[in-house]
Image (cartoon, rainbow, N blue to C red; front, top):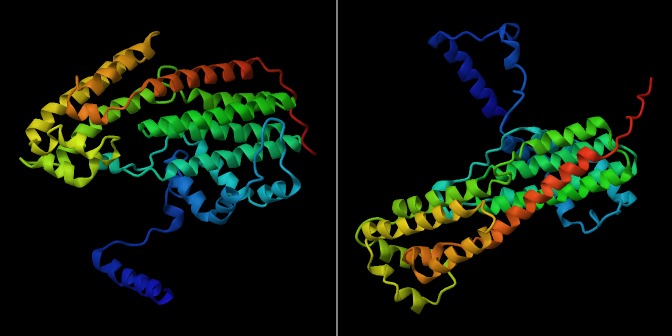
Length: 354
């Protein structure tokens, strides 16, 4: 490897004069090019943290003694385990602090798109939750607040995927953040600085669609028909779909599928049928914010199951009543957590040693 690097360096040295490019002395390089940008894609920082701290994160995921219910505090060996890996935890906090995350989801693969980061983010949020308990036990309220803010940051990054499963993970991670917030409030270690740090992360969620549920539904509405049209083309498109195993995800006997006539459909016929899929999501989104949304979404799901929106909608359109209830519950929980935080008493931060 060393010989290869030296050889490459020599080639660059020999080529440089020939192409008229002189090396730029470091003292002439603008200062802003010598430092990392203040805002970068958080996904890059997460993956770097997971790679560098692979042993720590893997061991954390395998341990059964690293988290507990309300009032639980980590035992001494867990506290040592966490403090010995502060660099990995700091890297995660740096990632969570970034305003944006793009995990490079291959949306053009439709149902086949992979989301390997979701499980890692949930586990990483638990790391911060456990470390927050460690810091509460040691009397470090601001350190705990930093980790709780980090959990909210992870939850906000989940929602940016614009995929419904990511939205549900965002809700789960935010619920963990609320739980740890209550632990901090009960400890009476909250400072004003800690409060403001957590509130700043809560602000990321916004008010209209805090967990990105509606955004995810809009993405699915557009993504799946486009992916099917791009993947299965020509007069035998329906037969290709039947042979591909795509519909194996559907809870439907093979004999039932064969009776729907998909195998005989061309790409033109499939495109016409999928217009019903688009209408289904339009009806869902139109009713998502209404007080009687549960009943309306259930009615739309029944219509889809009956074939009202077409063959593919009957097979592929999810019943979204449960997702809607989860969204409303998560919104209310986030608002309530914010109210508790804003109303909480604060203490003065400990004086720094001279």
